[in-house]
Length: 286
Image (cartoon, rainbow, N blue to C red; front, side):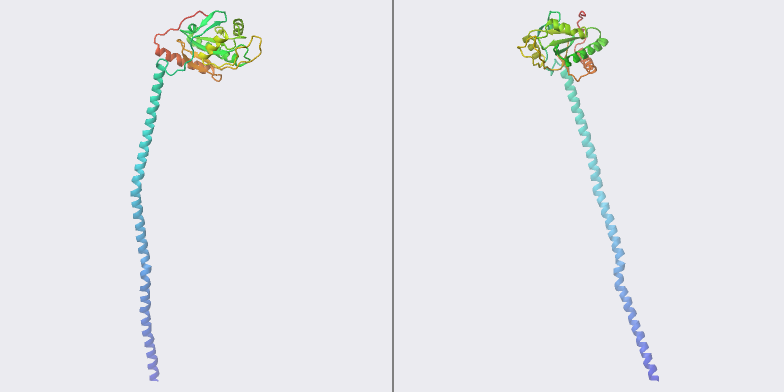
């Protein structure tokens, strides 16, 4: 019996001894695992710190560069603005000088001519000197465009005379159809238009010459006769000529009477600046 108790006691002590040995084993096992588990937060912290540090370095590297780029962009934009403004000013000054020079840059329009007016009297370019004039080329058999343009010219003349007084501008109609537009025909035709309008016609060669001087195209053949039935193709412009017989403007079909009047105002203003004290020639009203 004593032997049995001794055996059991020995077994228990052995088991206790084994448990005692197992515990350190578990503890050691914890110690083996815990370095990994405790290392993770420490490593994450290092990574987080490293990321923040890198972001700060990126800000330091990119921030000033972006700021510098912005400053350079503003300076470049400002420089371009002032450059183009300077060039624009130069162009405007050059244009002003050209306008004030002796007709520099103006088209060569107009020149000597000799035709007959609606009263059969000789009329030359000298009769236009001293006053502003509006000159239109057309023909009395024109169905619509010529009457419309001559009506518009009459409106312009009335508007100008209302502001500047009588004889401020002379309206002139020059026929491009001399075969059919005799002196009598021109006079009859102009009865429907402004009373101060001067109508001119002449020989084919005389008309061709004045058309060439004013750069007017017309399709009337030289061998037509008064009784022939045909239409004439021609340039649809009337010209503003200054008191020296120089070109001052051209107005097409799309130009309104108000726009013509505005250009006349501008031309007269420039003329007076170039010719201080100038007075227009006073002529008798027809």
